Image (tube, rainbow, N blue to C red; front, side, top):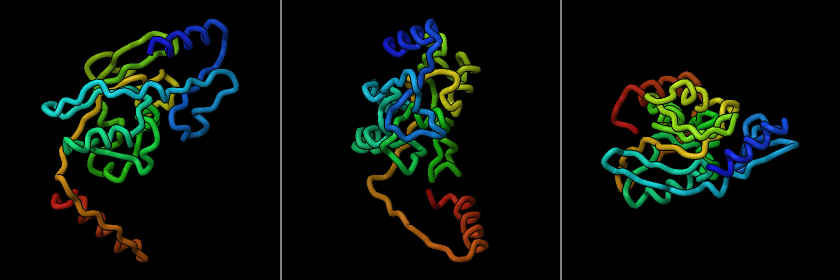
Length: 190
């Protein structure tokens, strides 16, 4: 995190633009720059899993796949996962992070409890709904325009040891929409 802050300070002093790159999957060229590109992949640590609080604290360059594999033996998982698990947590939090469970649990950014952010001035700031809320609300789904996410605490949920998944194909939109309403209203399905 301090290295990220130092690079941002250097960029500000010299009028250079900075982009971050984790898994290389970007929204609207977010991870591209003709000046400085920060490779976030080395910020991939998991600091703490707290099953009692149903949370995990990790670094922004960690890929979702690595987090899911680390949590699986404890039967814990993030409430929302994107279809591509080979992207970084900080990256998807900066775009919002939609997944198949978003209809029930919101975006990945909605399940973020706290962030460590390097601001555009190179300051390292912790933020949450209770502390530095304006920054917290701006950075989540802010497309990297308000700071670099270097760490996060995320909400977790427990899950059974096994599950069954169904893949259903529809050729009638009205039938699909009616079935979706039923699934969303009926608490039998997760």
